[in-house]
Image 1 (cartoon, rainbow, N blue to C red):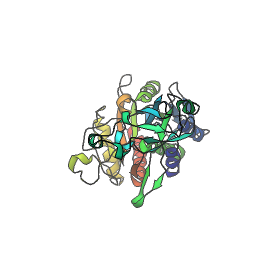
Image 2 (image 1 turned 90 degrees about the vertical axis):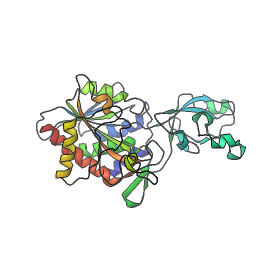
Image 3 (image 1 turned 45 degrees about the vertical axis):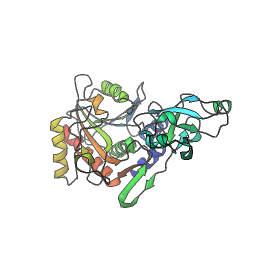
Image 4 (image 1 turned 135 degrees about the vertical axis):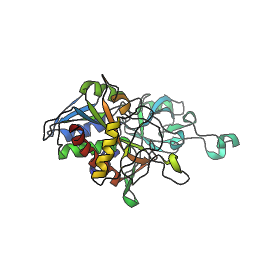
Length: 339
């Protein structure tokens, strides 16, 4: 699973342009199970279980990552851009980026500090004040290399940190994809649809189409979620913590989760010696928001890995938490089918 995660995080796949991630996954699936790609680009894989299923179950994780899109090429050859997905503007300045359709590297620049007024220094960074520098000296030179509408992704290496932690871009949600690939390779007790969705970061769009197509009775959404277990943050504002296992939510800004499945997850975790926690704040959302209201409704639970610095070039997660997420989802596949 760690090998899959490192390879997946090294790929570029901003919402709506997930081709390299999709190709890696479909190459892996070849010969292992039935799968197809729908019109939006979701991968829908069906894995035959060792036992006959009593319910139609879908496991989902999204392939896309947050990033940037070029909106204008200036006369001096610099590139204006906007964000794709929810990114705090202050994590963008000074970052190396890859305009990956064209294999062009650049850096996000801004006005030099010594040229700023006092008010500019005190103001929060905004995307409108930033630009991408690809080394071009004119619009004409830049237009030979890139186009308006091209995507730029953060460049960052995959780092094995101390204490069993890893750091990379796109851990949200390549972690969920890596877990699903491992589950597919190992096989499952019951028939299961594994769905790798697109465009989660810009409105859960792939999940909406995929859930309509699969029409499941139950769904488990594999995700990452914000951990604020850092200095200066206490109480409920910490949300969840690294090292304390999967996060099973009761509610976020898009979903009130199925209460029986919520309780089932904690019961299975306790019986099997798996650490498990819930979010201490109602915040955020994920593909469950689209899946649970598909057609006549889908009973849904989310299992998320706690992750610091989400939607930045340097997400930090605990590998043991990812292993426990995989173990819990494996138990849920059986537990849901035996309800």
